[in-house]
Image (cartoon, rainbow, N blue to C red):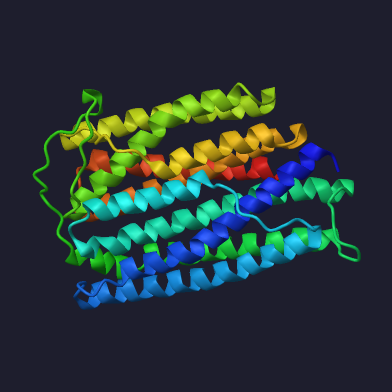
Length: 361
């Protein structure tokens, strides 16, 4: 196996190993955040309990995935090591940022439900990148294995963990669309928040204290605006570094990001507000991860990894817009606000479907 291919494969294994090891610790922290004793009320308690159970299941599953990866290291005779994962570090930073501004503990479960889904997306992305490299190596007969070991077993192990992530995402989606979250939101205050107009152009940092569902909505809306603004430039950058067919797809994603950003400005106008000057550290990390993986991947795999980076981002944004539409429907904003969010959520699902088809083919 060529040195570049082995290095890329090793880097993906280290990345995955770091994800699973870090998550074992972080999911314990999240479980504690969700199970705060001050959350009263039957509906709040029911939602908290169900989310806690899922996070605990995720943590146990993560331990299994780590052990599987250690078996892969043994099979491929690579020394287990953990690498940097900026996307995961960004997720941790976003969680801490939320904990610094939330003043109503009843709003923790909806936030952490969305945050748990983002974790699953990051894991699914990490496994997707590793599978992309291993598929090529197995097909070429270039995957290094210990004597008597089967290279196909490595691919099957990674695919099994990938399918676990998909199943957990479906489970979290069922909880998000079910009665516990709806009941919790019914018990939570809506507003008004009394918040001043927030403007990105002033060069200062201004945050929102999250006390009501309305505050949580604007907090997440500002995060979505930040992401779309960043994606216009990032997709341009990616498109300039891939083949023509992939460049066209990424340029299309850039145009969609610009459209979504403009639509969010319209939503803020309807609310009489402006986006807060907050960053989305998770997406910043995904972008940093994507740059690194594309630059270090073998030439025959770099274009596909670029598309997988775009797919990860669009999946995360799809979940963001689904959450915004859920919160906005509860608050019962003006029809134009909900229509814009619903249109964006529908477009996101179509974009994700098209990207998934392209990555698979």
